[in-house]
Amino acid sequence: MFPGVIEMKSSEVRGVCRENIESLEHWLRRLIDEVLLSAYGDYLNYQDANGNRIIKTKLVQDIMNRRAREPERYPRPVDAILLDDAIDIICKPDLYNNHFRKALDIAFPNGCQEARTFLQRIAAPRNNLAHANPISIRHAEQIICYTHDVIDSLKAYYEAIGMREEYNAPLILKVTDSFGASYVRQQCGVVHDGGITLSFYDNPQNSLRPGDNLTIEVEVDPSFSPDDYAISWASTKTIPNCNRPVLHLKIENKHVGQRFDIQCRITAKRDWHRMAMGADDFLIMYYKVLPPIA
Image (cartoon, rainbow, N blue to C red; front, side, top):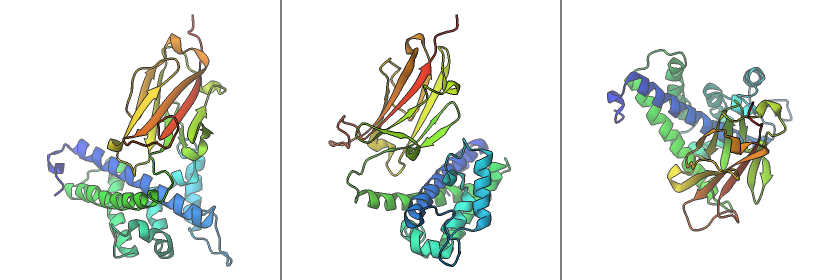
């Protein structure tokens, strides 16, 4: 029995299970996108010389329809890949053996069918969570144990890849703000020596005024433990100290200006850093803050 589950309230168990499944979905989407993009380019529409697709037409249509309905929730096609979709893609025998086995070998040493069996054991009770139906302690234990096994395997895979990179450093992969939009790293502009930027000062829908509350969340590469790096938020117009992934900020008169900046630095806890500023990643965001209404 997984430690602590039996003592948890039902709502706590459901919360832990949802968090684990969401984390797993993130990892699987990352794996699919990076591996297949490198191998095939536009993998959702790729066809070989005989016109055969690597991903079923029906699945691609579902992904595209989902994204069309909620473009802000799914900024990229890969973001609209849900757990069941990810299982179908990863556990397609030829894709698994040619592309995904190395990443999942620690969790599933017996190959593709074993991967499908255990991933589907996570997906089945996930549907109960999505529809507020009861979930048994046994199913909760399966979700927690199996998701940890898969994520640990993927962490080991990405750690091995990172060791071959010039700079194996924690990077911001996704930014979300309280205007309801999410931005992955590839959608951001580039600043400094490898940092990223997002600018909203020329978008009236993102304008702020004193008294407004702004929330910004960064998602750092989960192959790095949060214990291995520090997060710090800053601004040229002064904001409260924050060392967490989520910044909650009440806009004040001192923040008024055409280009109010908010900065986030990621600094690994070691004696060398990727960037000249002494950090390993850097995000700067710009908002327009209008004067208070008289």
